Structures are given as structure tokens and as C-alpha cells.
Length: 243
Ligand SMILES: Nc1ncnc2c1ncn2[C@@H]1O[C@H](COP(=O)(O)OP(=O)(O)OP(=O)(O)O)[C@@H](O)[C@H]1O
Ligand SMILES: [Mg+2]
Image 1 (tube, rainbow, N blue to C red):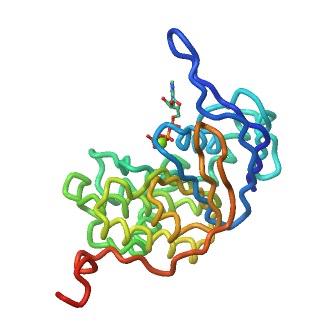
Image 2: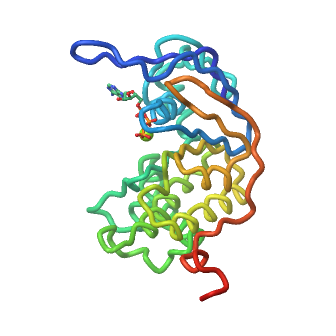
């Protein structure tokens, strides 16, 4: 599905150039959950932006769904991106729209009629367990609820490829675990390929089949990991049986 060969990317600043990624080669297989981990500034988000065609790389080759992305016309690119969705740390909901309109927005942008898109949005809201919030506005939601809504919005287009950039880092540990469980459930149900960026080792171990560790803007390590079946995050886990 995704193949990167010797990808490098620098950003030009006023006086110099910052290397964000240096010689990245990797493959991400259909249907897997691929993790990217590393310290702040190592290039995780830059890599995700390249993978999701939001920015271009300087050198190397990127093959997405068997197509060299440098050969894509604008029209091809738009078509390819219809199969992808993005979930961010800060939820990125539109505050002037209610939950139902937020979730159905990607279908509106694709020209789907109101009745159909609202029907599908309600299905997605039921999937994330928040159908009762359909007519509420994002300002009234907790962080965990807002992230569930943004997941419902990401799923409404049946994406084959999902990019998640630190989706739980704005949440407390227990709520983050609920979101990780939801991501597992959506993966089991819809089977998209997922690229999951996180600096939280436990989250990576809970979700991912394979992981790449970035350091100094290069690949430090890439390989399989043993998935954790559960995470212990409840506050009483600190005291165990004594509570
Ligand atoms: N648009 C830009 N212009 C200039 N430099 C940039 C730009 N985007 C990223 N960089 C630089 O590229 C490097 C990698 O940034 P990136 O955002 O990919 O890191 P990250 O691993 O996602 O960090 P974090 O964990 O803090 O989100 C950093 O040195 C950053 O300052
Ligand atoms: Mg980042």
C-alpha cells in the first residue's frame, strides 16, 4: 500500500535549512496498524504529512497504492485522497456546526444529499457511542467525546487508509485508553490500514503490529512488536488490592 524509498525532506527557514527527515525507506502493508514513535522534533508529523500528500518530499520515491505519487495529476491526487482520513490531537471540529453536521461534512464536500449524509452520520455516531450528542455543539463536548466525534467524521467516507497524529495526547490516561479501544474496534470492523503516530510507548504497544522508531530524523529501528491485549490505566491500579 505504502512504499517509501530514500525519502528526505528539509524545510527552508529565513537563514538556513532544517533537515526534518533523512533517508527514510519503509513499507506499510495493507490492513496493518503501523506505529511511528520518537521524541519531539524527529519528523513524525512531517512523515505523516508526506504520507498523506499534504506536503512534498525533496528526494526519494513514494509509491502509494501502486502509484508513484510524483506522477499524480491534481485530479488523481484528489481521487486518491478520497480513500484517506486524518485524525489529529486537537480534534479539529468546526465550532459553528453541530455534531451531526461536523460528522457529515466530508460527505457534504463530496456532494452527497442531506438525508443520506445525516443518515450515515447517525450510523457513525452510534458506532462511536455518541448518537445522543447529534444536535449538540462541539463547545459542549469533553475532550474524549470530541475525539470520538472526530473519529466518526473520519470514518464516514469508509477510508482505506487512516492517519492518526497523536490522537490521545490531549487526553487523560483513562480516556486515552477508551479512544485506543475504539481505534482497535474500528480497525476490526472496517479494516483500514492505519498509520499511528505517538510518543506514548504503551499506546504503540497496545495498537500496533509494527513500529518504526525515529531518532535524529532518521530510522533508528523498525520491526514487529508483541501487542498488549490490555492496558492498566485506572487510578486504583496504583494501589492494587489495597483499595
Ligand atoms: N513548516 C515547517 N517549516 C520549518 N521547519 C519545520 C516545518 N515543519 C516542521 N519543521 C521542523 O522539522 C522538524 C520535524 O518536525 P515535526 O513536526 O515533523 O516533528 P515531530 O516529530 O512531529 O514533533 P512533535 O512530537 O513535537 O509533534 C523540526 O525540527 C521542526 O522544527
Ligand atoms: Mg508532531
